[in-house]
Length: 145
Image (tube, rainbow, N blue to C red; front, side, top):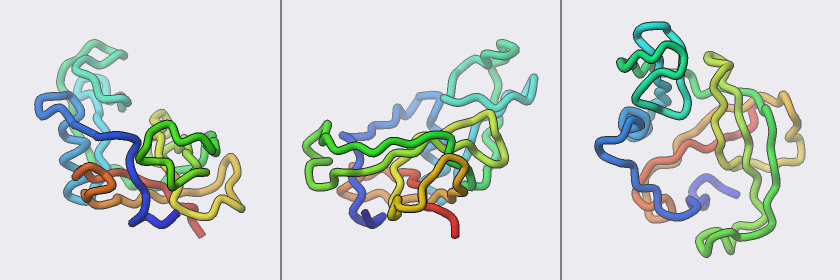
């Protein structure tokens, strides 16, 4: 599936006051940002208001390189939502970030999966906001050469 053809699974409606607001703002600027507790330095995913490690409530949102390795993956033949009906089968990867190995992000693979394997190198690409993504930018994954 080409990046320009990848739909989202239903509308993505980021909460304007939600703890993940900096993540979505980063994607709009072409950046991947992952929250890090100011008190203990732990990266926290999914974004939360309180650090599960130290109970701190202040977070920085540093830019993280969108490089990762495949932790797990699955191929789906069932269109769970109407938007996906013309795109099956598709592959979703669970990617372990290189800079922050404690963080794993889910995302659609937008490459041929013939060489996909656990441990394969990935790089993230941001699909711009548009009709297929319900006007929200989305992180996708590609296999690294």
